Image 1 (cartoon, helix red, strand yellow):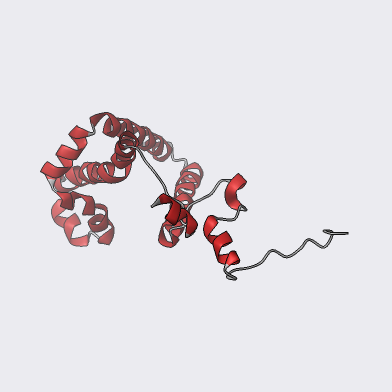
Image 2 (tube, one colour):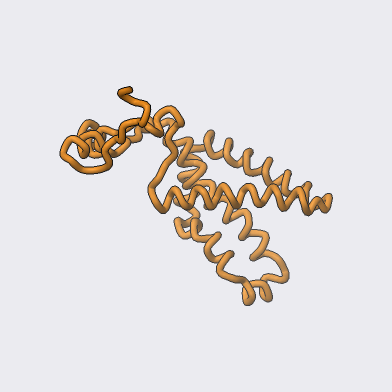
Length: 167
């Protein structure tokens, strides 16, 4: 189990059910609610007849979370109400900041704001694709049980002695 995973170099990650609900609200439920909030005024707009013909893949991809269906999304949101409300408040605040930057014509500020978000997204996607998750600076250089076991069996890099060592 955990000992075997650690021995093989894996880093087990445990989340209690309450913490999972909070995390799940942000990453599983919120995207569906956001897609609904964007899609409703768009498809209700008088110009939807024209917009739907020129809509690109961005809108289709953005609305994928709605494939879960209204009843399922509503059930998930209401069963996890406290966490969903927290994340909706956070998104509302962020939308307000973006709105103010657009309204005030703060192109440079908006550009920096959006660029920082884009950079964070790219870093997350790179980590996600490689299943590479950050380690704290204190543990980054520590060998894992798997690497020690591999070195014991003769695999992996051996530690080179420091030139000043042993003198």
